[in-house]
Image (cartoon, rainbow, N blue to C red; front, top):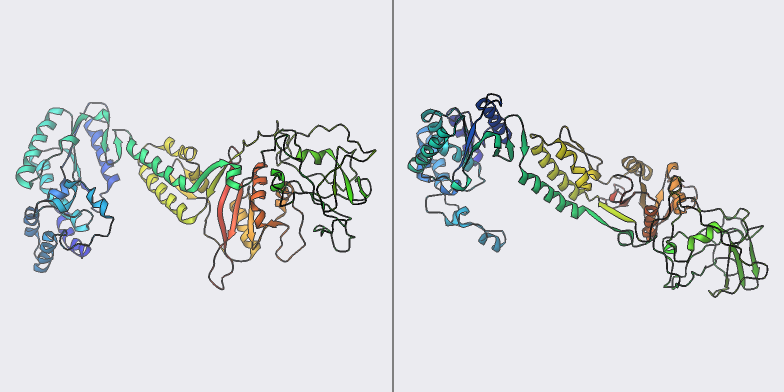
Length: 590
């Protein structure tokens, strides 16, 4: 109904309104008003070469102070159709405080200031803010003031945006006289008053604080309050999308903290023919016990090593040849090469996670550096057998990054911090809407450096969007909506979106890797090639071990993206999408 009425009345009044009346008019928005004001400043200062002054006025409590009788007196002479006149009078006189249904929280209504509420307005006063007809009626009500300023006061540089007025002159004295004339006209003809606390009479060189910008003849800036609110809102959304903390907190596994020297030595659990355990790494046709022995910690042992919890101390040891494995009744003595022994050192030094492929222990090993024994079905140890005394421990190799480049040294215990970015589509959409709205405002001001600094101050914006600082435009880095289809197609899609990440792709109870370029990641995690399959999966690990593999990849410097499967309509296949991205602090950029 409101749109219908305004569509009939607007063409009539558009021929009456002055050119420099803005707000709720086609082509007369905020940016058009600011452009027009800047042009006035250039004209008044002779292109910035001379002095000029401006007067900024505001109508006090405008919408709550509009007199309905005066408003109808302004509208009636220009409405010829009786039905349109009846509908207009009905909307003007309607009291929206009668028979209303309040749906908000009761406490919020009491917090509204009395002068901002229609419930406390005198009878016959006030228009509801937000209705389309109220915005149109507000322009009609102050048109009398516009005509007075332009034709009676002869002010050449005057504009109005709703109830905010700006007058510009080369000397302050005319502005003072115009102010008194405008105050008298409002009180006598429109029953309104000026808000004295918001009056400004200042030189143009100070800048005009108008509609969210500080406008000067040759440039404009975004208002400081707008910039502060932008940072506050982005920080609020960032708290919902980003978490930062130690790797132990964000993954549930700490691969950097080593036990103290007083901690018990981890006991190797040996899977072999003497213990009766199944060898998961034995290929078909191979004799039992001829291939691999898995090192780990019993599940009922509370003193398990962090590296064992992360799945890092696990490799294969041959029983034949020069691999230094010998059985002695119910005991099995294993000679471990130095490259393996340093993985579970207990001398109080920080644990250095492997940043390279674990040594292949099936090859001829050097002289033994340590000896571990255990009884069948037990964990007790005994001194080394004769002739197998431990030699001088070899110096631990320098840690390397994922590219094999030697590093200065292992990171200190607990030093690695991780940032976790949530990729929830709804929250990312809210962030995009907020950021796009503020960038649209900043685009009309000299804010290139401010825009370029957003990514540094708010890492979440850099994670999800590419910001063009020159054009103040926003581009999404990827579409977070989950997609269905063949598994390899889904994997290739998210691999293209996150080319430098370790992609943990869920398939049922496992996470799998499908491409040849995932080989460095598989070596870092100590994964073995799985049996050829129709899916094309090359490596994988169970989902229940996701935390320890995540911690291991992060400790090696890999950013990790989790792509998990979600619910899908029947018959559409299983859709998978990214849910979170983990980045080591100071590591690879998003």
